[in-house]
Image 1 (cartoon, protein in one colour):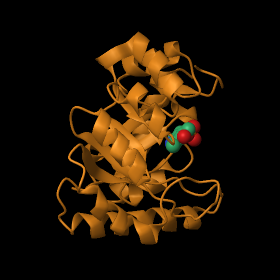
Image 2 (image 1 turned 135 degrees about the horizontal axis):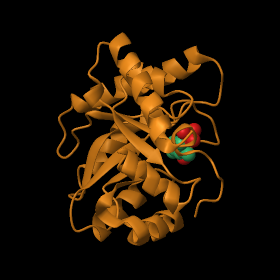
Image 3 (image 1 turned 90 degrees about the vertical axis):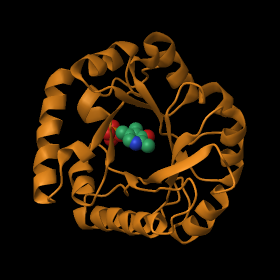
Image 4 (image 1 turned 90 degrees about the horizontal axis):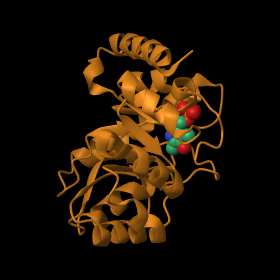
Length: 228
Ligand SMILES: *Cc1c(COP(=O)(O)O)cnc(C)c1O
């Protein structure tokens, strides 16, 4: 299967999930996660019409950006060390992994314009996962109102690694309810209207629960491991 064929299948599934949830599929943006694959595959995704690309390391992002540039809209989806912010900040439009004030402060300082950020929440509580505990998210976003270059457009999470769909679904539901709660606070520069959730194995559940950005790697562009 090539990327265009995979994309077709994924779009059909997105449409079906949207129908089940009474949603418009235009609300869902596909991010092609290219961290496992070569530049060629990333270009294939682009040519198939997936022009939102996601990388989780600064080296991968920089390498692909050097080849592709602003023909794609770039998303940084991995945990980001503050000292690496300067390497990626002028290339990306979205950051999905804002999880601490020191990182917000560095983004605020290094960017010349507001950056679209998702606050990453560790809903599942798994120790291996990054992100803020759900109970701490509201105090955290309140502190973010002090940074003029931080725009919190939404929340992001990764579902636990399990085959139990009900566990995954309740994780997404929790993120959705937190997102609504924050949106209703009407804080400056915190519209919090978006939800980044759902990957290759769980994007249909995520869409049923309100995802507006889904991050798809292996089932879209494949997994060649070591794409950088
Ligand atoms: C790798 C990665 C994805 C994509 O994972 P797949 O299961 O291959 O679709 C999505 N989000 C994040 C944060 C990732 O690191």
